[in-house]
Image 1 (spheres, rainbow, N blue to C red):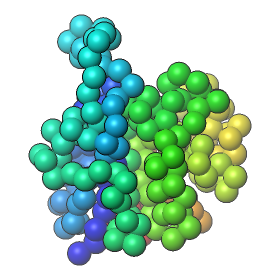
Image 2: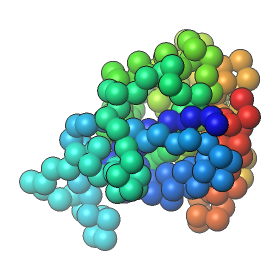
Image 3: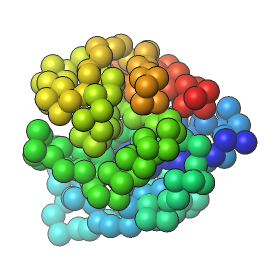
Image 4: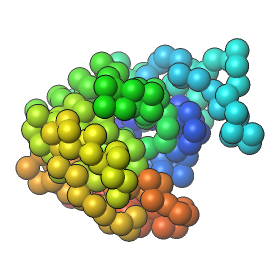
Length: 217
């Protein structure tokens, strides 16, 4: 049984992990017989968004690990406990929490910095030659951390985001929501998901292909 890690960044498309993308990832991994281990940083989210009003909730604080446990049904561990040797692969679902919590791309764009624990995991998985999947906006993490290796990846077809990734050294591949892009040299798999949308059934096609490729590799 292959053991695949899934890194979450809270719970909710605007300030945490995108719930559809995370749930589809878990579903397809389980369907293919993977042993799943979820992880999240045990730190506060950047901010909290009321997903009904789409407004920032001032004066509130939520912990990413505690919030992500909602998606994982409690079966989750602190990201600092992740051991590369115990995993066969890893997947990062998207959501604005990736761009706000796992890195600060949402605020600093080309000058963004990746959370050090996240950066270390991506580098160590790469060095170990293990497959990594990046969904929606999450390829930003791979491009920022591994740009010097020129990985091929996709965030769909947004030209402004693609240019930043290419400025970091990545090779951006335009793709549709029903596609995934695989870089065999670096064992990186990516799919655009809600960077393109528009609905859960559409993003499921690309995510299923991504999960299958991670499991295959």
